Length: 176
Image (cartoon, rainbow, N blue to C red; front, side, top):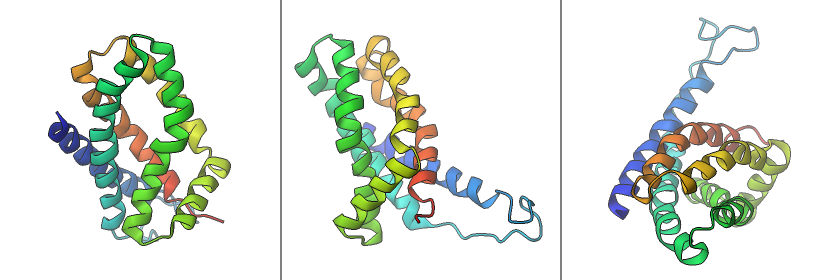
């Protein structure tokens, strides 16, 4: 299951970043024109896509396979509320999102201090955690109450396609 989880989530992560980058390059320019002759065509950032392939495969695929289908059952049994609370209030701010920023830091050669500054900035200034919670709290309710364990990683990959586009845009926004 780990190879499948890695493959699905890595592919999804890279594809979602391609969509995010294309959507950014088609946004209106200063004159309000989208894709017009005055729009500067931005080259695709392959290192940025690599970040989401790595993060997708290793964390969203393999780590979530281990967490959701093994450890959560050992730790919480059938207690859905405990799974959601732990996932949203412990894993998300201290593991899930920092792992994405760490992957970006490794690919772009950033120091750990700079990685954490970027993460903190996006949480505080760009609403990163709030955006995550708005999408993933109801998804986690479905995930742990309705979705069978063998479909959980695939279900998360489907939903996280949208999330990865959001995360890619937030984590690559200009920092002040």
